[in-house]
Amino acid sequence: MARSLMIASPYDNKCLNMIANYEQSNNLSDAITKQLIRIRATIEEEKYEKSNMLSNEITQFLFLKDNDKVVAGCQMHGYRDMRDCYLSLLPSTSSKATANLLQNVTTYIFDGLGMEQVFVEIDDQDKKNAFALIDANYESLGSDGKKTQYMIEKGKYVMTEGLQNGNFKKH
Image 1: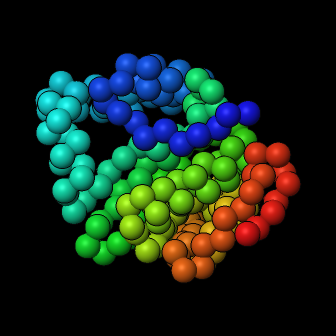
Image 2: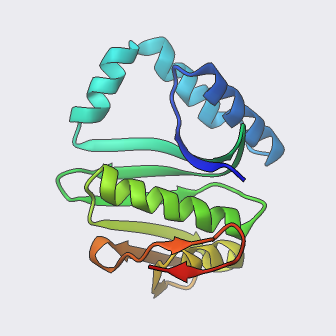
């Protein structure tokens, strides 16, 4: 499997089509696709890219793709000055795909964006994503009775190989 991280681009029609197919196959509204199309209609690509590089606040849709199919995704919202990011996980059919997405996203956030912490909040009943977060080395910060917060810090991040085939090897 050729899995890789894809940062959603409003200016890439192939990317938009993959996201639209993902939304449809997971019974999601087409809100992500519409938001990206709205961005493309209101701002030139060069200005969009420059804003993403210089703005303190970062919002991106990140997807794990397997060849030309999106298998998992999340929305990332971060702050450069605080060096913190917050992820909202999108539905996936596989906790291993979500764990693989989390590993790729975490590496991108720490190494590519220079962030120090990543936070994720999920419903207490969402066992599939809880297992994926644990598999991707996130630590539970506890539950408030309805939602559980997870966190990972750059200094404590351990990459795990083989998340897509169940062969967990830390290095």
